[in-house]
Length: 170
Image 1 (tube, rainbow, N blue to C red):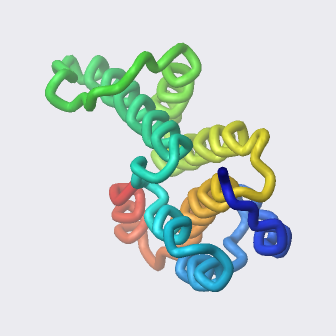
Image 2 (cartoon, rainbow, N blue to C red):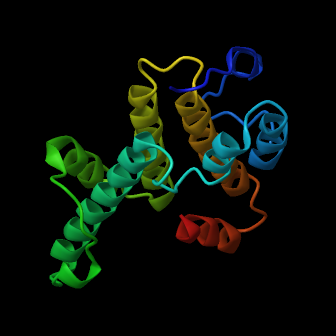
Image 3 (cartoon, rainbow, N blue to C red):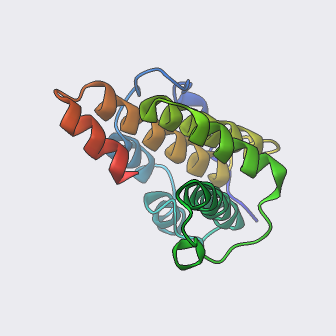
C-alpha cells in the first residue's frame, strides 16, 4: 500500500511551466528527506529509475518514444537510416508523432525545446490524475522541478554558447 504525505505535499508551492522554480531540486530532496521513509526517498532521489514505481517506467517510456520519433523525423529529413539510433520501445501512437513533428518544424531550436518541455509537462499533468498525496505526486513534482531548473539555466545563460550547451545536455 502506498504511503501518503498529505502535509508535505500540501506545503509544496505550485509549479507552473515557464516560471522560475521556487527552489532547487536539491533543496526539494533535502526537505523531503525529513518526512518520507528511506525506501521512498531512494525512489524520489532517482526519479528516472524504473525499478521503484510503474509511473517512472511510463515516464521513461514516453521519453524513449518521443526521442525515437524525433530520430525518425530528423533521419528522414537528412535521408539517413535511423535504425542505429533508435532505442527499443512500444508503439508511439499519433500523439507522440505529432509532438515530434511540431517540434521538428519549429524554425527556432530554442522554441522547439520549449515546446517539447511543455509537452513533457502536459504528460506529467496527465499522469498526476488520481494521485493526490502519494509518492507518485512527489515523483511528478520532481520531474517538473527538473524541467523548471533546466529552463532557469537556459534563461540565465550568459552567452549563446552556454545556451546551446544546455540544450545539448537534454
